[in-house]
Length: 342
Image 1 (cartoon, one colour):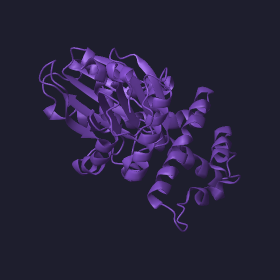
Image 2 (image 1 turned 30 degrees about the horizontal axis):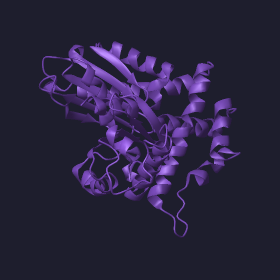
Image 3 (image 1 turned 90 degrees about the vertical axis):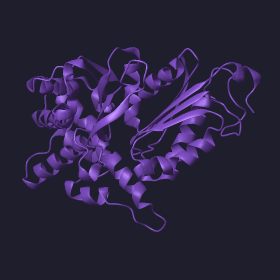
Image 4 (image 1 turned 180 degrees about the vertical axis):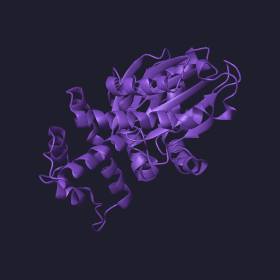
C-alpha cells in the first residue's frame, strides 16, 4: 500500500501515448516533475492489450524512479489510490467507442484517482491554461498527424473540441507526419532504383535501417508477418513505425544540403499547411480569425527546426497570422503541470 508520506504529498500523473512511444510523467502538487518512464507505442489502433501494457509499463518505470522510497507504493497496480489526478492521452482514442473500450482498464489501473482519458492531441491544449486565449488550434506531427480546433466560453472554463482535420490513420493519409515523410523517402528510393539512378546516401541509410541491401528486398521487409500466432494489427503498427523511423535520415540529409531530401521535407511541410486549411478557412471560424488564436505544434517533426520553419513559411504565404505559436516538445510534462494547477 502507499505509505503515509506519499498520501500526504499528492502526486499527479500524465501519460502521452503515441505511435512510437509512451511517456509517463509524475509531478508534485506544484507541478515540479519528479520522475518519468517510457515504454513502447500505445496507439489504440494496434489493439487495447498493447495500449494497456504500454500504460502499465511506462507508469511502473516512472514510479520506480520517484526520488526516495517514501513516495512510491510497494507495488503497482494496486487497489489503493496512488495519484490524486491522472490524465491519459492515447493516440487513436478519439471516438466514443474508443473511450468505452479503454475506460474500464484505466478505471481499474487508477482506483480512487480522478482520471481523464483523451486522445493524445488533447494534451497539447495544456498551454492555453496559462494564457488569455479562448480559441486554439493544436497540430500533432508525430508518427501520425492530427489537427484540432478548440474553444472555451471564458478563461475559467475548459476547452472544448469544435473542429477536426486529419487523424484518420495511415490508410487514409496521415499527411504531414513522420509516416508521410518516411513513405516519401521510400518512394524516392524505389524511383531512383527503378530508373537506374545512383542511390543517395540517405537511401542507403534507410535500407540499412530496414535491414535490406537491395531496393527490391524492400517489399518483403515491410510485409506483414502473418505467421502462426502473429498479430496482424500489431504488425501493421510496427510497419508504420519502421517507415516513420526513416524520417531522421531524410532530415539529416536535408540539413546537409541534399536536394532530394529537401524536396521531401518541403512536400511534407506543405501537407501540414493543407491539414490546417479546413480549420482556418471554415466559415464557422467566426470573427476572431487566426490572430485571436493560439497555435500549438507537437510531435517529433514539430521539434525539427528546419521542418517547422517550412511550415511557418507556408502559413505566411497563405496570409495566416496567429496570435501566438507555441511548440510543445514534451506533452506529458505540460499535461502534468496543467493537472497540478487545477
